[in-house]
Length: 438
Image 1 (cartoon, rainbow, N blue to C red):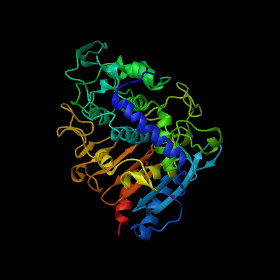
Image 2 (cartoon, rainbow, N blue to C red):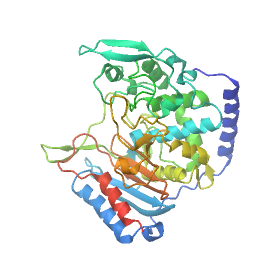
Image 3 (cartoon, rainbow, N blue to C red):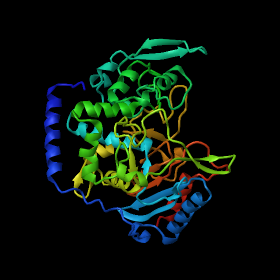
Image 4 (cartoon, one colour):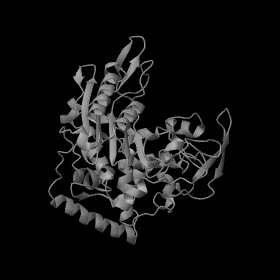
């Protein structure tokens, strides 16, 4: 592993070592919360409204829009509902449970953002620093100016180095390979960037692929958060997963959250489903064969989408953010850092998916690994200003409304085709929740 040696790094390593000693000598967090001791009225909702919400989610499962689901709603630290319905696996009829484990995919991203902000508090990086200060492999990045139908590309140098701020809000110009038929995204797929053996290999692959635009010009959902994980690893001197465990998961009592499923937990792991139009029912999808499976402890520690977690664990992570960086006496971040994370940092001309040639989603910006509803009216949202959220590729989703000290998590495992006429579960949940507020 390449190391970056300077005074700030050495100072940060000393601070990290002291923090690790503190955590190792302290009593492990009491992770019993959240429990199923519910009181919707005390949480600030009508009991009838929460009954309506629970019934709506249960119907989504019974209609086979998804095989199974867990969901939780918390306000002011009080649990209004925490339920599980349906099946975690259809092949063996395993019931979904409150402690089921899920591929949370891109809901890994906010966790990586918290890790990077911990190091920001220790003075190891600044928002306006060039990314290449921490990833020298990026010093000679090029930009795809144009391309033709045969895939021939015109490349030009970057006008300036992309910054850490742009890396955090997806405006640095990197591709991803999850979508798009342009040469940049094709290169991500052809080079199997997301199936890299480790973060060092991932960085070398990304360095050889041009940017989609000049830094700051466009918002592109990107490999940026995997790069962030690499930077955490470089600055801390720890393997990325070890840093997350020591600085976030252990102090928060997130015992279920890892980059792979431990042998003793395999029975709790939910599988992914899709709608089969020929059989007119949900079917369990086969395991991917193009990369190590979730039972492999040596799989890539992807900061952009690699974690497995439970509803219980992710609720503890979100309550820490609602509390502005602290949970059960364990402080992970300062309130200022949490406020930075949930504040839109895109320049005024940009929204999510926006740029000179794309309008984007009006009223929605991006902070540190969260989307942020900066203007609910423009965004057509009932949620409060500053609501921040994200989701995962298998359908998991969450949001936090800071005006109500409230968060929601929905955990499902669904990819591919959906039942014709399937309900929009996210909108149904929002409407039911805001209708229930007292």
